[in-house]
Image (cartoon, rainbow over all chains, first blue to last red; front, side, top):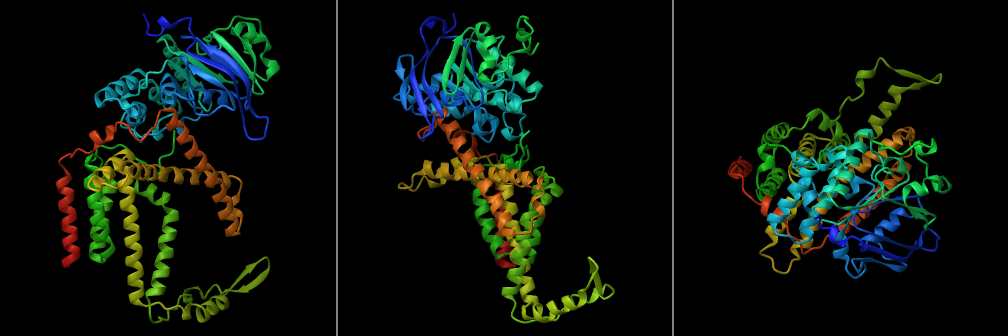
Length: 258
Length: 287
């Protein structure tokens, strides 16, 4: 039995009436509520500036809400930051900005070092994560020399070493070529099959919609749709998101990378 | 693929990359003193050693020279300033005698008396600037020393990770009880981490501006302003993003340091570096 299966039915994350407004503008997110169950694959779709990244940064306490609260396994994020960041691993849009170490190994080991794990455990977790993502042979290299796809995989390895239940990916396909996207997509599918809950934001849903079990549409900081993808697909263009080609042609959705 | 500047860390199997970082710091400390007091013999010797280290570390010397072109402008500037300030007498140099055949140049059908202008500069400006052999020697030595210090910095930062430097700083500060070792070490390692980033961002900004013919502008103040403002914005944004990424992976001061256990381990080649440094110190002191 997977270590996540015993929790099926209970929400890992509960977002309750969450708002975050930037300064004196009306930009940000407003009154957002939803729950995340184990092993879900959620696509959060929305135009640029719709509030996807702002929402994600509340899931592990990188931003403090103007009002509302995020709960993880019944604990508030604001008063349990370390716990929240361990459960919810975050992969940012710009892979370069999240590289902390000067070698691939150092970067992947950064999280477990912060969790004050014993040296042996850090080595074990880091080597495992790098092996699973096919980066072990590059462990002494400077991350700046990696390709875009390899950098994204390194970011995933860095998060995996912290053993998170939920992996949040903010626009993971931006600035990647076709091979890089296929490479990353197969890693994300593998993570989901390994039992991780995936929350992924994108404005181009075509690449991941086949694998998603749920879609949330954010428009101008509010949730305007939260249902199974096949139910919402015909409505997405109202909110500035491109409907997948096959759906437009009335055909069944097939995997983008096959 | 990301750009690797000369200051960026690179992995190599050469001994310079494998030796204990504490040994590198001790050698750098003494070599800095040697270079600061070096004359031509020592400068030749250290240049030969550094050239060999650069070559064996996998640096493409031509590419390195190309990437350091702006730094060479500073070296030349330093040479000129030092030569002038260290000279006490004047030497009459027939600087413009070789261009007698190009007496006039024509720009937009206007004839310009080139020789006249250059002779005016020679008679009214250059003859008032003191230049002598001692000044030239001193200028040459000072700029050469500065150049070697920078090459030593490149060799160090390209062969040493920031976490190794952090571990070494903490080790050196161990005997001092009232210094916040971890905080100082993090500050040093972040500074080293940000130096290549600064160069990379500067290149990005400069390339983006060159693509819009910025190099045709003549006003140096405007040039500096147009480079500096976006560069500072980019660097602050990068620092902000890095801080967020570190926070999302639970960064705190009370953490396990694997680098301390992995990197502060002598490789056995340290003795060669210590002996080489001692030899250079003795040569400087007694020759």
